[in-house]
Image (cartoon, rainbow, N blue to C red; front, side, top):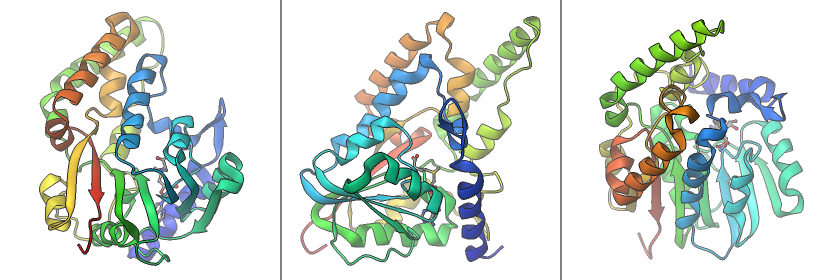
Length: 292
Ligand SMILES: C[S@@+](CC[C@H](N)C(=O)[O-])C[C@H]1O[C@@H](n2cnc3c(N)ncnc32)[C@H](O)[C@@H]1O
């Protein structure tokens, strides 16, 4: 499939499926997140990490691949900015985003790898869970383009899963064990065991919509990113070290799930670089300094 066809497929998916409201006011896309009360506080605190690095106040915040600004915490990213420019290839995403931020938003159907904006235009950039949709060569372009449109003295904050997480690999036995126990308990209660396949595939970028095409031999890891952004002021920190599949398998209210997540959050805070590089989801921060 050509790069253009991949993008068409992604756009079609989000227009027709991903950004359709399915139940309880949630978008279909939220099925890939852990929305259970036991994980809520941890997930919210991870989302808040984005705010630490944005340089405020500023006029324009670019949200590259904004989607519909689906979670209330996403609204906090624009505090301190006059306008949030939402760029997305899905028109439905932008229509939904407009319902949330109205006049403070600007909405542009655009490709994050070919941004139609002049250099240094934005005093802040956020991009969450979007670049993994692009074929690898396009991801490189997208990183460079996001850097290009970032204003001098400002910061871009990106969240994107690694191809493979060493930490999740190391803890895989626990995930498998707990999935086994969970399935057994579900059967005892006469319920169907939880579906993990879809989430697992999505996190690894393997479903038909997110899978990068072509000769995808390069792995997206910390070394790859450092090479791509060589010479730039780059930090790789932790956004969230564990996958949704791990959360769903291991974290449960009767097993002191909230407490475990508090501990995990404290560990991540104590060594953000380690958990960022080895965990599932890094928080990638780059700043543009004078003349670089
Ligand atoms: C997983 S959603 C994430 C949305 C939002 N950032 C969030 O975290 O909820 C990915 C979004 O990226 C958009 N997208 C995918 N490829 C894109 C591209 N090449 N250019 C612009 N947007 C893209 C999709 O339409 C979708 O809205």
